[in-house]
Image (cartoon, rainbow, N blue to C red; front, side, top):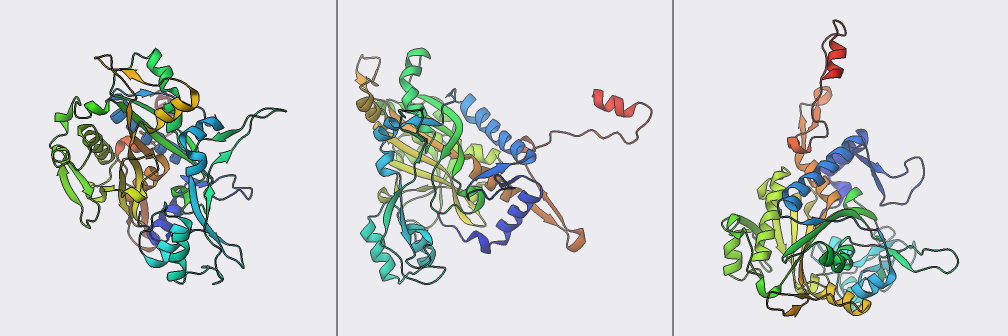
Length: 424
């Protein structure tokens, strides 16, 4: 994700200024010195945010017949031991030896070299790049410490006396995976089946920055589509999108290409029709949010830059004044999660197909950042007219996202008009 420094971007600063003046969003606990990375939404911001979620629910969850759940934000440590997060959800960090400023190594190197740096590299590889590019502390120009991996999980032990080790969930999807068996038994699920939820997640970011774009507490609109990998090309309604052009940036290519959903499949650019179908549906959703199609793309993520559980990843990004901003992680998680939770919990999470053959379902993930989506919508809706004292700033939002549905203002305060206005 190529992004410019926010502090030097006038468009970004204008939006943050508007957000704070109109209380769209602002730092949490404003009368106290709260930690960075925590944000509150004011009345208009909360209304827009709610409508962002409502449109997602209407266009994806309801139209695709997904099941929607609501899960706990605190989960036992065993969940994250099985998922791999306790060992794999790490960021590479380095500290200044003099002023003790903390940096995320991959972002620091990328900022200095203007080149993408995979976060999954080994510590020694980061150290070599820092030495090769003569990178020092950006504040006091002193030397940096060797890079170490830092786990971003937030612990939340529960109980009085003998406490149970628990954590704030770092992503909403784990709730869906551990609830899958319960839902299979009670909801008469027939694969492929999407299970969705909206909720909060938490990551102890090393250096929270760029307002709601990199926060400690953030919201996700999550969907996990469970399917039989042998039937990845048996998708209902595929004909609805087969000729729809999806904007993709392939590995090792510099130009975005518009490729129909059926060609994504026939040219083996994606794993199957199920993947192409949901890429198309996601792009259609963001067009309904009012984002111009030319500002959207799915970037194919290289193997060394993908999450540890992903076989195939397409990051959905929108072009902003900060550069290309990632909004959605679209991951082919295979059977990694259900297999891991089945082994750890001693539960059989396999299912039967029509031929009485057992298999562990594979998963296609659509993990949407609510806050980043909110920002992208604001930036593309931001307008300025006039100059000086006559300058007018406003948001040109799609009607379905407007925080106020309608207003009724009686022109006079007599002849019963105020009363009639209230009645209406």
